[in-house]
Length: 187
Image 1 (cartoon, rainbow, N blue to C red):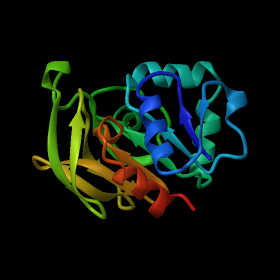
Image 2 (cartoon, rainbow, N blue to C red; image 1 turned 180 degrees about the vertical axis):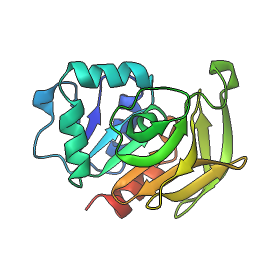
Image 3 (tube, rainbow, N blue to C red; image 1 turned 60 degrees about the horizontal axis):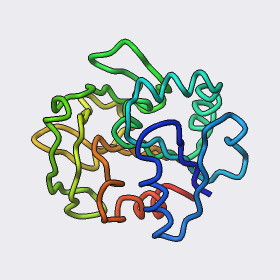
């Protein structure tokens, strides 16, 4: 069972990707939805500040952080990467702080700076990445492993049971990164 945070952002798109792969999903909006039957969770793209505040308001922040620190697999895309990051280079907020990376928010500019690019993704091959007000990873801790870069900037990382991308694989028709998550990270 994949728990997809449905507080804001592209959660439906993630659900559709997992449905194509035969993985059941449920939406998490409140603390009561965060149950023991979850095999993994997804923090979708969207607005990280809004999502972070809603996680706190719903009493989910500490619960989610503890679950991730306890080994619950997590996949964060764009805003999800920001929520997972231990440090933000251009923002004082730290939301969950479980992924040992430093992230720069809105690194590729505003909405008008959005773009699509084919990027090599380790274990997947070339992938049609969609970048929308995307962040990038500026620094990595010793346990974080680079899975993809674009223009000399890190845009996908894995740290044990955590996968995070600066782009939106859920906004393509290509299920390979979701499949990678299920195959390589979810037990």
